[in-house]
Length: 295
Image 1 (cartoon, helix red, strand yellow):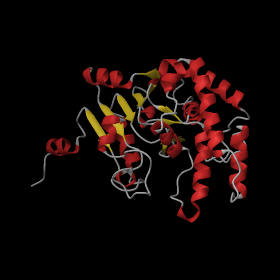
Image 2 (tube, helix red, strand yellow):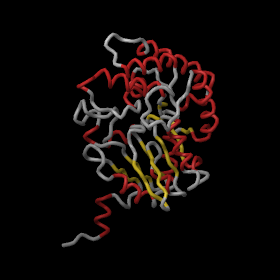
Image 3 (cartoon, helix red, strand yellow):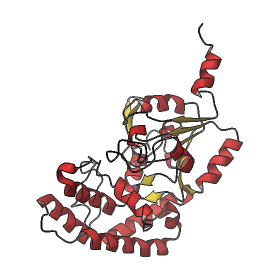
Image 4 (spheres, helix red, strand yellow):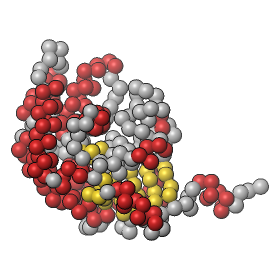
């Protein structure tokens, strides 16, 4: 006998107040299409893992939008969006995605909230990603070179910076200078077996001229020419984003208690999970259901 729609929705979770969409393979399963549909009927859409190594393209009113960091709820003008603490965020990429949305929703930035505990991914992480991938040679695991692994590494060895640090900028500046100096000391000096690309990347890191470094976005990201320019860039980001940096645990619990429907979208997929995936050909975060609880 055919199941009733009510019993089907009970199994699928479609009508539940908290819905999670995850991939079961290596990504590209069509999560994006499903999330886009579900996002039209929720009040809060959240991301919990990964960084700009995820994403998909949306067409709204015949205009193309490419999201790598922003949750899909951004295409629903009445939906709040949360970037959780488990996400690593390259702020220039985030700001570019918000800029692209201005025509669709001039106040889009007011609908995106970022956890105080989410780690910031810097251009130096992207340069280090390129260097580490080049060092692997034929053993390369094929990263997206967007700095995801090095940023999660910084989180694990506890020299990373988080969004909450942006709220105390003097301390943020001091620690960012320390982080860049650490990166230069570890990865900036030329090595005997360096390729031409590695020499170029190391020089870019030594001078902190990220405009010269490779760019995973094909030259659209920009970069900076010095540490001082980087400090000033983040000073502006701190001012723009100050009101959007929140304690995500409080925000999500308050919204659930208000009766909001919450949609959580996973980046990557189960077989890319750092613990349960096809290691070492995996991403740097937990992509499965446990990551939702901690991210």
